[in-house]
Length: 193
Picture 1 (cartoon, one colour):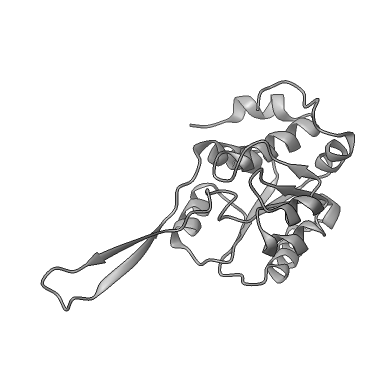
Picture 2 (cartoon, helix red, strand yellow; picture 1 turned 90 degrees about the horizontal axis):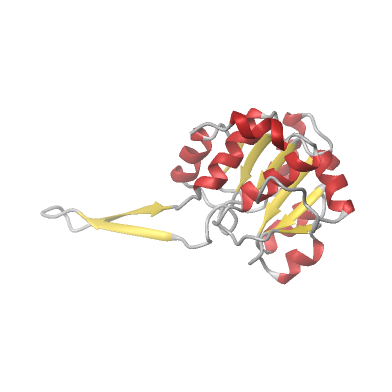
């Protein structure tokens, strides 16, 4: 997204974005393209057992957006069904406030994040891509579905991103929030490499 205003965004979405203080999101299919890459390795000369590692690919623009959110005082959080050391590491690098891994049912984590952040539902944005994200989207002040998300989630969301999962969706939403709040111009010079 550019520095220009957001003419294609509805007045309702802009009004919702102005209130956001906490941005929670799913990981697989939103911050990644949804692919799960498992890498196996066999120890040569060992007992023949193999180990499996998981690889995640994150978008650098999402990283910059999450870093800017932190700088501008917007708390962020990941709520994901998978337990992934790669996600935990990326969250640490980006100073993500809340990291909830291995959440088969995400509602408890959502409520815990909201309580710890000291915000109301109107002040929460939530972004997802699939069916398990629907209950959270139905409660969030600003519910977001990625462009390639499932139709059922899109039907209950306020905003559908222009970008597909893993291709800068978090950055798009953070820009939307900061522009709606009139703080984007202030944020740009604070970006760090």
